[in-house]
Length: 142
Image (cartoon, rainbow, N blue to C red):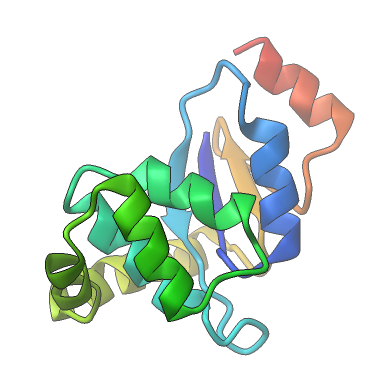
């Protein structure tokens, strides 16, 4: 399953909870909707910077788990808790390589027809919005 999402989107946070324990391989793609969520781009870069230290899913989970605290001081606290080197994290999240990684995900979403978050793709079929019970049941069978 390919998942396009935005870390500042409350519907994406809800979807993350619904998907957490499903037996499906999740491929996460960044789709920051900057017009609605001004920190979305920075948060996507933070997760990619954490990924460079082997902590993608840990940072991903922590952002959705504490959705009300997404500013830099709370990112730095997360780094400390997750054992992420803060100096390297800061350099990486501001790097062109990380920015390009996020842009690449966004462009792939546009090319796939994503117009809102979250959007899940299962077997090439787009499912925009919070997954309904029918889709969740299908994902449980995967």
